[in-house]
Image (cartoon, rainbow, N blue to C red; front, side, top):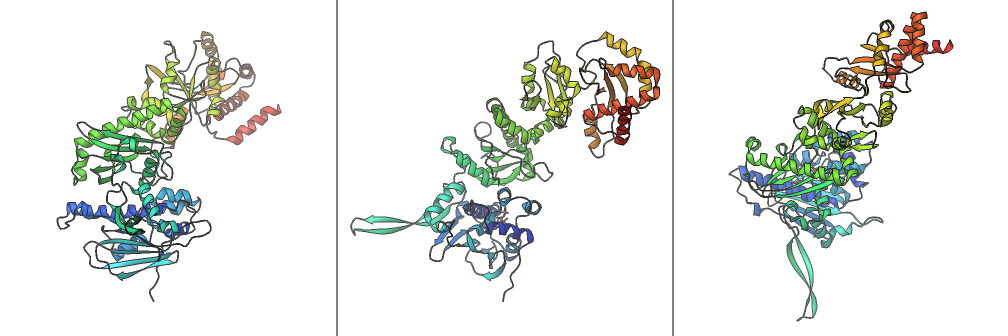
Length: 623
Ligand code: ADP
């Protein structure tokens, strides 16, 4: 008896999902298997381009589909590169390596649908419609063939078999119909034809099937069945088609299949460029960030084709980092097919295309920003940070390209606005763009520093991403207006000579208060507060938000913002402090500590000794 081998653990889970089909869209199994067949042919075709011993032409390749209703089998064959016995074992005994790790981590937590969509499970989807799957394969250059057989979760076995030509036959034993599911349809020519049209039309190799048509024979006065080998796909890649002849649904299907996304893209850009360099392209902005987008594993790039034949899967030279979320394909006749990766990087052709692609993406985003703000905000939520990094990482060099694509929350409009919109509401005399940072819009809105700006009806940008302020630092100004942090010493709305005097008079009192506050640069009275007693501001370039952020980064020297404790000059606490300065200097120091702690809490900073603070407050309360 032959020993049955077990699937790897994560494959087992995936198979279980497939067999018990949480996924309702079972028909995609066909596109997955055809896509594998096409990949296998691609591999052999490459070989023929680079290896003199392989004498094959593009037109020698094909994929065939065979239906056998009596035996309930559907067979998909290709004459591609094939697999050896070890390859059968490695490739089909375990799921695609790229997804498996993440799959292991998420499989238990999430429902199957997301997972299936995100990782493009490929081959195993065959089990959604089959009781048994056989893979009979002969590797190119080998005279031995092997058959891999599995009925699902129990495992698989591999036996030596025979096959006349190189390539692979995938033989599916289609399930019997159930109450909720019609499997018979996968044995119908009509279904297969329409599925190929729907999902695999652009495949560059012919997908052939023997079809049967009934004819009425006038002479014999009876119906006759006519047999013919039909090519089911047009083989014209979707990007080569005329824009007007492509339906939105076609773009969506293409995108989901090609880039393994369970959700259609938010935007599709179809390019047909002619000129110094000609190319056709199809770009997509995903509707959500890929699961690995914010990890090191994520690789940006567009698929690059030369006249319909794939050159490289991820050509990173075609996309700037700040648009790394864009997916798509570029096809140009102006590149040699067997161009090496090294020369690829330097070609003028690629540089020209990249520049053009970038401007197309920008234009698309601008249009969305102007015409569909809601959609743009969704885009910005997903990928806005990437645009900000683009400005920051280039030390502002890319600012002209990106700054008008940024959105920030406006205190006045109560929604996200662009810098252009903010500046359009300023008068010539207004020199500043005001902003403040904090955890959430609501929290920021309660901060004491904001009060006078609201009173004076001055618009403030509420920055809730820790990173925004760094972007403003790099931008420095926008259309001649400076970025000013509301919590900085530069955000003084009016000169107040009386205040200066008041501060001078209290100099000694402040010195004494400072003795109990080690980490503070200054204490002063302020006119920037209306009802609140205290706030924390900073002197110089470094804000508390920046201090927090920089100090969180590994391997950086710790920095300290120059903190200033500001006390509302009109608050009753002022008299109390003056009173204590005259009567009880120790108590004054306690008060200083309490006020400072309050200011820190409002700013969202931690306090060193909460117990001490709590005791001090209780002492004061008990008096
Ligand atoms: P993916 O295609 O995403 O890598 P699959 O589970 O669909 O994952 O397939 C696993 C592997 O099995 C493929 O990467 C390929 O190496 C191999 N394979 C699948 N189908 C074929 C085929 N028809 N011919 C040759 N190899 C194949």
